[in-house]
Amino acid sequence: METSQEHAPAANRVSCAGDPALCPLPETPPMALSGLPVNALAHVCETCLDPRDAAMLRAMGMRPCARIRMIRAGEPCIVEVVGVNPATGSCGCRIGLSRDLADRVTVRLSAHPA
Image: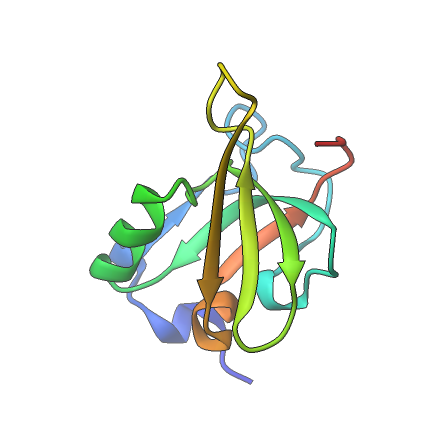
C-alpha cells in the first residue's frame, strides 16, 4: 500500500502536523479519509495532493483543521464540510471524492458533536 508521501512531494503536503495550536485533536490517531465510518465526524489533518486538487478542495472548505462528516463511504465517498459559516453553523457543502483522493487526505476522528 502506498503512503501519502509517495503520492506527492513534501511541497504539496498541507498539514496541521499534530501541532496543538493548529490541530483540534492531536491526541487521536490519524487515519485516511477513505477509512472513516459513515456519520463519523473528523478533522482534516493533512492533504497530500497535487496543487490543482488541493486548491479545489480548499475552495470547498476542505483544508487542514476543517471539520467533516462522512456521508457515504465507498467509491466515490461523499463528505460534508461542517461548521464553516459562523452565521449558519454549516456550509452544507458536500463533496464527492474518488478513493484515490480520499486515501491522500488524513483525518483525526472528532470527539465533538456537530
